[in-house]
Image (cartoon, rainbow, N blue to C red; front, side):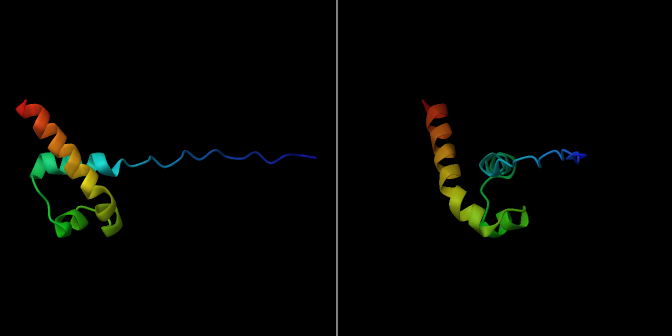
Length: 66
């Protein structure tokens, strides 16, 4: 019996949406929900990750001010 060889397809790269949002802020400044949607983020991603992005930015600003 001959076994079929399975071709190994490389997995799609995993996006780091939070990092992408942070980079976008650093490049362009504050973004509205519409801006983020136009940049390719879904409404669900925005609702889920925007608070964490904002917290990260506050933490960075606080550290820079210290």
